[in-house]
Image: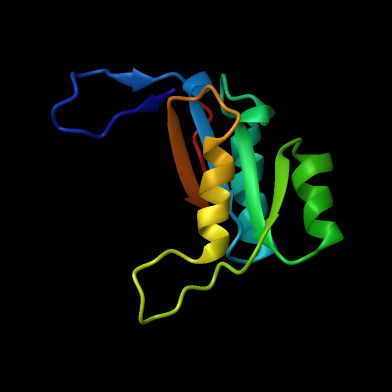
Length: 121
């Protein structure tokens, strides 16, 4: 479950993990991404089908870690780099968000970068 951090939410309000689609953007190093993915595997009520890991480039070692070791869906996207002179998200990030919002019954999308650890409860 995920607690809401909104001031207007009632005390104890939670979002059930099964209602959340998780998009992990692999923008950092493999070890940071690995920490995030391993912590997501242990989240109570979160199915591996709900986790989409977006990464740029073709790296069979990375894809193996995402799919074989963690059981998550790997999504190869374009560049995650954003031009400093624009407020428009990088094309790869737009593609990842579009994919995360497609074919899901989730009510929310949680976007994470590698390096975050998620509590199992």
